[in-house]
Amino acid sequence: MSSSERESVAQRDSAVQRDTGQSFDVIVVGAGFAGMYLLHRLRGMGLRARVYEAGNSVGGTWYWNRYPGARCDAESLAYSYSFSHELETEWNWSERYATQPEILRYAEHVAAKFDLKRDIRFGRRVTRASFDDRAGQWTIETDRGDRAVAPFCVMATGCLSVPQEPQIKDLDTFAGHLYWASRWPHEPVSFEGQRVGVIGTGSSAIQAIPVIAQQAAHLTVFQRTPNFSVPACNGPLDPKFVDAFKANYPGHRKNHRLGMGAGFGDLQVEPHPGGPVLETAAGKSEADVRALLDKYWRIGGANFIGVIADTILNRETNRVVADFVRDKIRAIVKDAATADALCPTSHPIGTKRICVDSEYYETYNRPNVKLVNLRDNPIESVAANGIRMHDGSFHGLDTLVMATGFDAMTGALLRIDVRGSAGKSLVDVWSAGPRSYLGLGVAGFPNLFTITGPGSPSVLSNMLVSIEQHVDWTVDCIDYMRKHGHRRIEPVLAAQDEWVAHVNDVANGTLMLEGGSWYLGANIPGKPRVFMPYAAGVGTYREICDRVVANGYQGFSFAS
Ligand code: N01
Image (cartoon, rainbow, N blue to C red; front, side):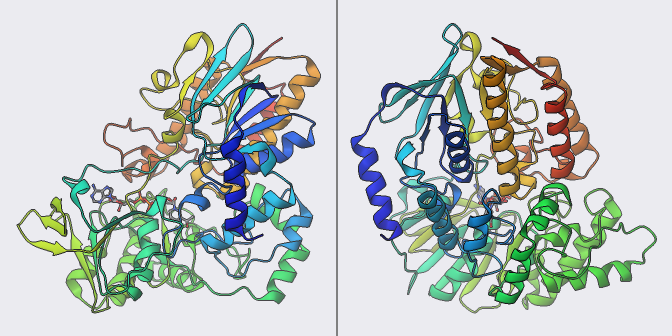
């Protein structure tokens, strides 16, 4: 059965089945990589679990983000599940960075291999989750009328799952084709002969632009803030290299979990040889630093940002690294004014998510591509057939692609009406920004777990590493509670306050707060400015979580 056939079967089954008051041991919200692994682990413990998913199949971010050029900017051999040796051995990634269709095929393969879909209800968006103090149970409701109860609720809602739809005047009057990168149609989209506009120049747009440019008659890129991007140097994976890597998969996985900060193992040792760097710029001449950067620029990939260990700690080091990239942009882009506009100057490098591209800057040398700098000339309004600029000029368009990002980390959680103990609303509790203990739970919200929640490494890490760690921690915790006769767990407020302060302290010790990034909520008008991910690295974080458990779930309180 093809994946689209499987999807339509899942959709059909979900359409006819509705939960009306059923009770489960655990309810999971979301069937991306976190929800899928949760279901597998919970079942393995003999627990009855129900998963609700808004999409019509598994895969989460890889289900929704189907824009042209979408691929993972983490290396395939690291961005995959480690929980099944059979799975990691049998699955073969074709490229260094897998495409979205390949990752979605992988998600479907995992769902089929572990028979996950029978416990997932697709096409249902959870609208409300409320805790009943007396019954000690969560009630979950969906937009399709499902209602189910369970003592535990686990939010596996993803960090980048709610698109941010900017208020651009008269956007709804555009009469051409309007696409959102993160809600891309399932049918093929052709740009042949079209005048296309792209709004946004983050990771999504930077992947889409070179591909669209190859097809479109003309492409206009509307850029407000340029981002730093490094070459992916993508290519097919050498089977011999893959075999050797797989022969030591357990060793590599251990490195991912405990090694370097972001969960990808020792820089460039895995999977591409070259030797770990991990040195600060101290004592090196600028020329030496540049030589090192140049070497890793040619190897490619997001690890570039870790080549010099103090890049996001030391302003002068950061300047050297940023200048290096700006020089590369100027060397690649032939038109000097376009090159200048593409050079980021508003934030230190690495304080916004580094982008990883294939021929992004080169694309601006094409005769059919034009960059419009919105800092010089903002968008005035959208018309039926194009975009009118502040200075009165007009860009005629047949197709408009919005790659304007996400309400990150808290967006999906806060769109559900989550009510904890005594009816307390998560929206109210987080009105000044998210507060969580370890990114795993929230004081006042008993038996609620958040996978890769704010306050955990999450988006600053290899998501698969962080997902597996949080899922294992959560499921082991539920198991512990059952074995010890505890019916209720929640973070102690003081422990939560201490953790939030620690997350802030770690971020304050870096340049990250200067990025004006979605890590801070800065891309959403009115969103509280709080640095949401934990920036001390996955190894340190895992040690802390393990220590909390070893100390009898220190910082959590239990009740029977
Ligand atoms: O979103 P973004 P994204 N008028 O927020 C612009 C992950 N990801 O979807 O910076 C004009 O980075 C906005 O401009 P500005 C990855 O973690 C991973 O690209 O606000 N422009 C910016 O240029 C990434 O970081 C992969 O001035 C407007 C752009 O829209 C995260 O997702 C692939 C605007 C949004 O950029 C988000 O990336 C893709 C307006 N009104 C994404 N509003 C992988 O490969 C916004 N913009 C794993």
